[in-house]
Image (cartoon, rainbow, N blue to C red; front, top):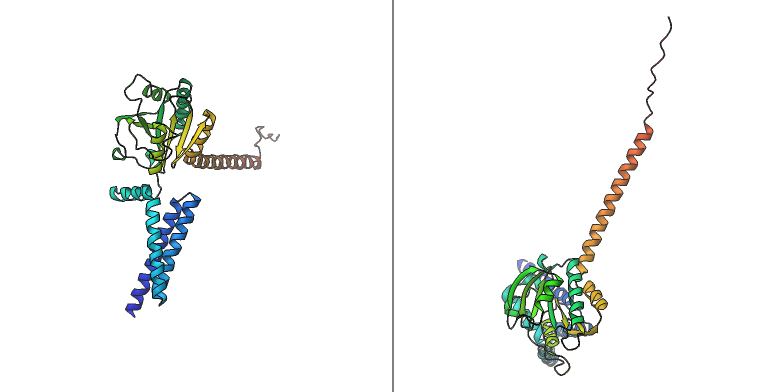
Length: 303
């Protein structure tokens, strides 16, 4: 009896752990094609487990195992960047990044969006090359770059970005890393991407390379030759874009937490207004129920 209960407990834990891992994987995958590949691979793994456990089919079991092995090798080649990133996060113990829970230091304010858009627009008008990496929760470390640059740790402002990317400064060739509302470092050398080498310059390849490895960061790129604006996100580059389009994209990517916070504050303000209005209504109703007292003294009776 104890053996059966132990077996049932093990099966229950196995199902729970597998379900939790599957939910974590599916929640982290956003691209539809990647999601289809992951579903097909998990279906093959489930089929191989079912055939080995409940069906006495040796030849079918060998064929399914070979198919799962071939698919595993193919996915390892296709997802080598993601698997390398997963091993890096597990090795450094950054589990919050795996769970997709950004810390408070990555939560940017509304001023971050306006300052970035303003600086990018002015740099584009002056045709100054620029590369700004905005960390949205990937927890970028110095070892994630080819060169970690010079620590800045200053409040983000459009004027400071313009000074950092001035042509006569030693830090204008590298990237600027932004976390939250602060500039962390400047003059950072990013890893380059292998895609589009013949079409893009060094800044655009660097923006693609860092966003391929880290899905919770974006890059704003200003071309030095043409002054065109670009935005890299998850290994994809949108270019050319206007300043207004850049502002809309930044609001969409960075302002997700801002909208939730603003909606919560709006709900709380609305509830406070309702409570104050009900309190005023109760006070007015109570005052209307009280009869006014007469200030005229009563007439004395004549004796």
